[in-house]
Image 1: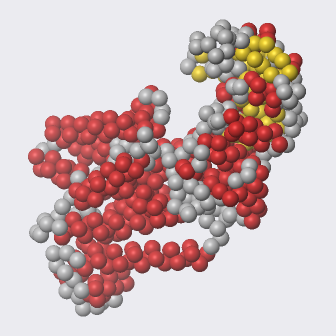
Image 2 (image 1 turned 90 degrees about the vertical axis):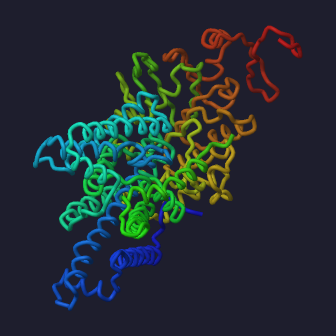
Length: 345
Length: 260
């Protein structure tokens, strides 16, 4: 049986951490070697050595470029994105006490893309705000709107999902309106491709933004792991256990908004990862957040790297938007969760 | 000294649910709160454990304003059992009871042997030691309520507040839950619906009506036919029951056995 709290079981913790690292390394190795141009692992390692430590191994310039500037940055970004979205999903599911909560379904991703499009096409905020800043404001706006809608509808946890659906429809409509009326044909094509999720344009500079945000978000979530456990029986139960419900909600909702917005600004909206991964992780390590959150980070990262590999090889000569691949996996998983979450008659 | 309220008021949506209640709780005794639906029992309990902030007046714990007590300090002192709180998360009995240690543990503290002892002791006190690993969603209503009480006990409280803990339970479980509460030996404030159970298990009774405390005192002083008529709108007679306890008989219009 799974338990909410971990005993002082260091060997098990170290073994789990090691296993996670191995899974990540294998996934990344796969991601840098598989593709249109298959590259042997040994070459990949040499290219890595050249890129990081400037070791001067003889690697062709094309292979060096493909591995270091294209596939490795792409794989690392996929890892950060998958981990961050899975983390956000786990947080939202715990805070809202709804197994279907996640950034995509609650409209947080839609809000972020509206915010990003406002910056990209309408030029709001200019250089000071930036794409990520616009996405963050958009995702906060979406969270606030969905929260108000849900509270207005009685605040029950199933209302949150309905409010989220309404919110994401609204923000998607706003995005579509801006794109169709204000953007040039070329801009529109670019935005639509980006909206479906796409790791194609990822550069190392994106990683320097995404990695600190993901790390910071993870640390903030881990500090609140025990508080999240206390939400199992609702907000009043958490408050009576000494949790400052208002502060925890505010901090963690802002963190999920920041995580989601950062990823949306770089790779576009990717659905279902935030929904499916926390459930898979709960199945593996149990409901206690001290273990669930790291598990979400690792499983989300590995899942997204593999999904990205699939998106590159599923259709020859073409790269599918990553959102399509995650949806292909996620939609059936969503149906399964709905089925399991049904109340007995 | 323990909990007391001084002229507290609380409302929501323009309606006053608690209207000027002053109440003294006696240490290590069971205080029952009775009153019709919507009379403010649940609201008053939530004010007592600071889940809601009073609009006016003050709630004190050992003479100190409860609003000035730290949230975690309060949770180590005072525990709350909600009416039928449930979860969709797959938890076991001991997972739930362990939540009671939350206010005693720092953010990254490991699970200590003291925590483990508190959990085991709490489970033993509610008679569920053997159910340690049973999944929450397979428990009956009465067992769930016992687990919640065990979770509350794991907080090591000196005050325990229970909101209609016997709701929707069959009579055997109602009696066993209230018997358990009575034996705990901590200060208990419990909202109840059943007047006979209240008079049987409570040392003192407070009667709420439309947010006001209309009577408080020993059961035999408070539960009179006149008061029950006034507050609940029901005619009763009171007699001594088989075991020497007072028993409230509800007077209804039809003859026994006759279909109304």
